[in-house]
Image (cartoon, rainbow, N blue to C red; front, side, top):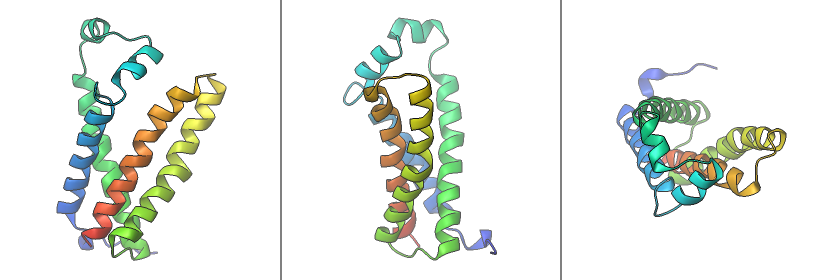
Length: 139
């Protein structure tokens, strides 16, 4: 298998990384899951501020978002994804087959509640599926 890095749509990769960040901000906001997620992690806004805020988390999230988008773009290129539906399928398979399953094992061994798993594993499943959709549509 030969990966053609030059054939990647780098603008789509950047857009997909931004999409991931926007979805993450929404997912873990008070509009969606911030309150239950914080309660499940024994966090308060005050505690987060005392620990230095979310700056380090956002820096890591940007880097990870770029890596995820780049990886999905590489996989899409390697298998010939050329539309949004194929991209969504690729993203969903990657997200459920790798991310959600990995979370699942950890959550069982850590005896964490199902609600915690669904919040944390749900985000990459939705996000990576959308990343695949965007990358596929932009091929």
